[in-house]
Length: 134
Image (cartoon, rainbow, N blue to C red; front, side, top):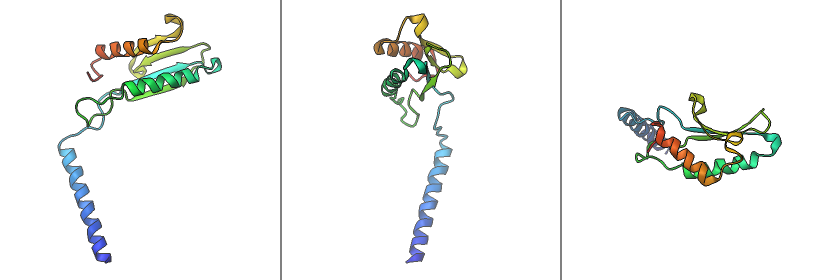
């Protein structure tokens, strides 16, 4: 019985290795060259954590569709919640790590974003950037 299990386990390992080598031969990439990351900077002493969490959840639910090729990751890779050291700050930025677009700034835009407006601005940004999937 133990020789059967060893042979059976060895067969599974070989099949797994063959699948891995065929996937690399097809050059399937698990991630695109750039990631689409939304950063929400909020003032923790103002009590805006829950508002930030709500917006992050809504953005992830809305922009979690995958491109036509199901092997690619979702359009929106990540939403980061970042407590700000600046009092009263509430900003939403796309791809901040590569000098991205400010989607919303509470001080500039006057208050907090309506969810519909925020999604529209994110789609607008998506249409301007070629790194986003269509």
